[in-house]
Image (tube, rainbow, N blue to C red; front, side):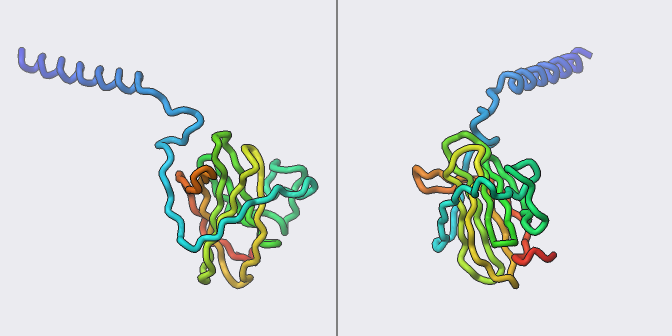
Length: 175
């Protein structure tokens, strides 16, 4: 009976210590993604594009995301988000949209990969937090693109995760 009591007491003590360590652990800073940043390797021939601010009268292709609602032909496909970045592909005009969602000194980056062998390109939004940037490219209407959303540090020229990928998006917008 005495040995059984000691086992129960040691289990209770261990559980209490574990609970105390969880409660006292330091939370992640709001400026950092959960798990921290990890460098992402990019293809050697990737084209780096500086995004530009959309015109003030431009329709940002997200509900509530801009000065006016976008027409159905201008909607963004493959909307993808990761910590600090959001991106999509507007098939009408082959425009890549990149939004920086965090005020952390880094930029949003949206990589574009094709299913027909064209080298990858990355649209970087260096306009600051809470802004949209666009990169206008011409993709084959018979092809598909895939987006890779991540962070970019202009100080060292490196890309970081967390990152997310979209599915394959038809360039002509016809699924």
